[in-house]
Image (cartoon, rainbow, N blue to C red; front, side):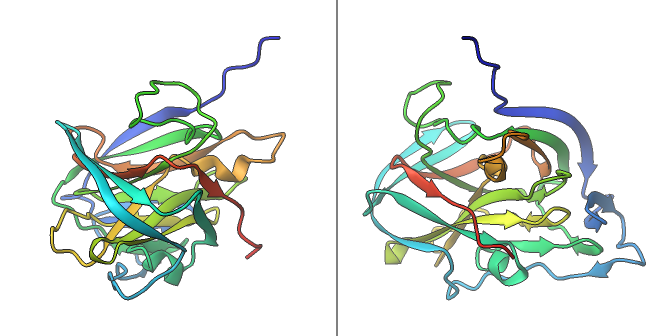
Length: 264
């Protein structure tokens, strides 16, 4: 029997965004827009501050840094050792406070926020993410094989991200973490972004003395498709530096556990 080839990640369209000309992100009734100034009808909000004292998600002990690997020109990989048989991500609906606990701003329909970035030339790309997009590891020499486990794979970088939940049927899922290097602790969660809302993740450059490091990854975007017989992929719009971006990756090889949140 021959099965249909699953969708992993497919790029649908790309548009250039120049933050020097259009520094505001406006959630126009669920559609991402970029503007020179916030529209009159928009509610202008402030980006969420980072408060290292705030903890949400499932806590795990980070026993040690197992290795640091430079992968020029793309970035730096840091392998973390977890004290756990399985790595659990708490499923949480993305509210203002929940997103802020990971240094992220929730932008709801009708709201606008000014984007900050040392990189002005960015791209808005519409992707189609499949349910198996996270079942791949760039760290363990497994190539492009479909794996039975999903490892921890989180990142931060110098450019901003906007993850817009634009699928007409299902919410978007973004995996996040807050890591306290000196405390040897990390909190992990899956943020379920309601249809029509968006997450703004500001630039997060590397600071050696940072009290906490906020991390994210969207390869599990289609987590909401699990259990569905009618939909195995979803659409999302993402603002990012599509070329020549430099990333700081944090990963762990143990299997991860992802479940659904309680109804909002």
